[in-house]
Image (tube, rainbow, N blue to C red; front, top):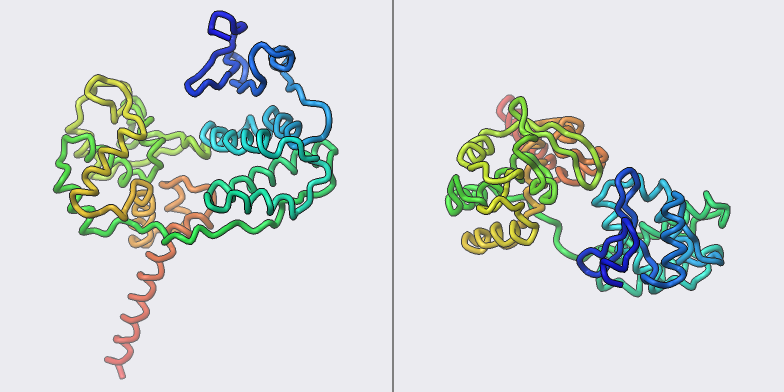
Length: 335
């Protein structure tokens, strides 16, 4: 179907996916092929405010039912996008399997088939876990076969925070006034994810800080500006709505930001320290300044104190080790 042949409120997005977009309604992806009876049934159901579910208690039926449930629609946009990748996989690869008779071993098998892509394999387990909770809500099951399935370990080295010498080297290679430096200071100064940084607008700046609504968690934050960030912002012309806009005023894409930062990382030999590691770095600097987990959480917006501790563990260990050795030396002198 061409755009002219698609019904009202239905649009084809990049990649060929079809969405129902109407003011006052939740944006919903239509999973059926345009022009088919299933498509028209799904379209009619969306207009009525409910989801069509295929006959039979298959995983495909469960995935579609879950996709229209409050469990899914209440997620932050970024989380919905991540979940949709797994839901598409479930419907395509696992769809015919009986959702009401799935066992723990079946969930593990789905994970193991994708074990070469560890993150995606683990995400399959996590999304199935939520889907089966929805199945319990629907009366399809009394238990959750994905609950308790262990996640795979990536086997890769843990992400390292940027050391002070590399931060200094980056600032020297990307002077104030460059877009690479601006993005770098926003990432380091706010401790936010790259997607949230690139969405920051000039209107978000207020009272010496920046307002952020995290795409992944939906959490609203206000973060005071660091001196380095204030300097970078002061040298940035307002050429668009977003702070990191290109010279033509258009927003900077993730790939564009990655290329800018990567060029400097390559120049200074900082390939092992990536963009997301700057979020770790912000948390480490706050931990080194003896901020509590709750105070750090107020800046980074992590959903739990446990995640804050995951980010700051090595920094806290280093500070405590220094304190321990200092007390040890002091005790020797006194004796």
